[in-house]
Length: 235
Image (tube, rainbow, N blue to C red; front, side, top):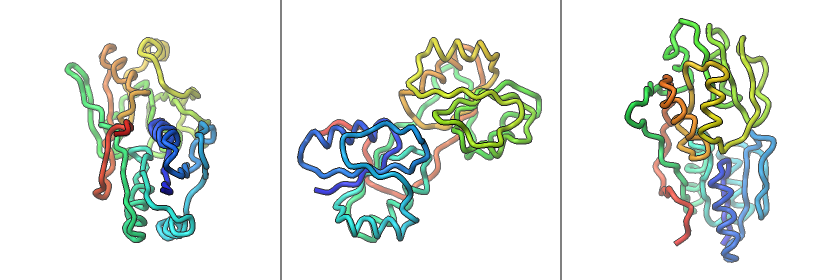
């Protein structure tokens, strides 16, 4: 069976390895190429976009793909929508891997916003020191704000950066003690993050709770209905 995995998460790589080990599938692992230092997988890999829904349909037909697994990041909404449309047109099954969303624990000070553009409003106009963990590409809403930012990214961020920004290049998972230490070192007053639901980056939320910090949480975008799973364990 020829399966296309749309990757971009650590779970996608784990799923790929698990399926390859079954010796019953031909796996093609696809990455958008957003992260330049992508980790390898033990199968055929392609990097780059498909050229919209029509391009993805052409790829599925040309490569005789029999099923698609959407294991992209929860905020890769455009790719997920394209996968839904393309698999419907090709009449092949689509399975979406969905991480369980983070939920605020007792004592946490979370403030939810619908999208990244709403974050500056939630931060207010009084200057704050903000730990920004929403990714290196979503910086436009912060360009004219009065805050100081600590930006963490796997790859160097796009330029220009918001004024008063310090950049840290790092890849998770991150330990709780390290997250507490970095927030104290930079005198962070607020954490901004997307509700990615990843265990590898969840420690920052507990660190913020223990330090009594505000958290601005960006809600996930809406996606078309699809058959979903929340675990990579094979039955």
